[in-house]
Length: 184
Ligand code: SF4
Ligand code: SF4
Image 1: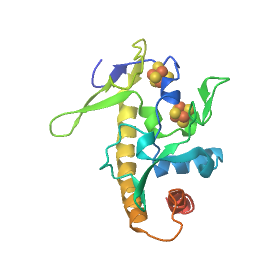
Image 2: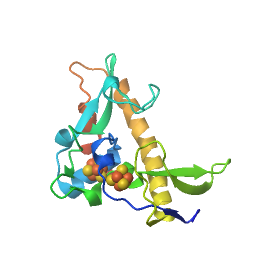
Image 3: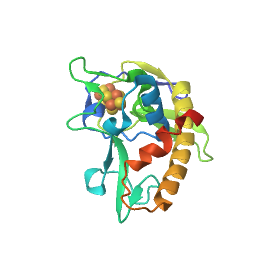
């Protein structure tokens, strides 16, 4: 095990779909809309700082509306809006956000930023069962794709945050990319 594989098998305990807030990128949202027809105004919510932990105040994906700030997230009450409790499976599995695909894997890099290996996060409360094998190349490809998406996300948020107009709402951010998504 090491560079090419990591020992892991998901046992569907549902922790990551019930206790963890999923933060999709606009690309994730567009994919979900295109592949499932779900309404982003229904499956997204915008959380204020007291509703989410682990996101730095300086994070560039905070949406600013007046003096308030908001983080785009998949809607949840006691669970993610896409978790089917009857089957205990994700309803949009093939279109799920990259973050869900990468959980609970953690990238390790060399000092000069080259890929070293994937391990399992120790701080995300996944039971981290080791009775399986996951290949790291697809994970690394996903990681690189997500890194590119995160940069575009930050750029789009910066445009949104510069805008000031009466009645501005965090939900207006959705219109900035979903309605223009044919170009992406
Ligand atoms: S927390 Fe870990 S074992 Fe549980 S459902 Fe998520 S990935 Fe699978
Ligand atoms: S989108 Fe699917 S995999 Fe991701 S948190 Fe929701 S139910 Fe779980």
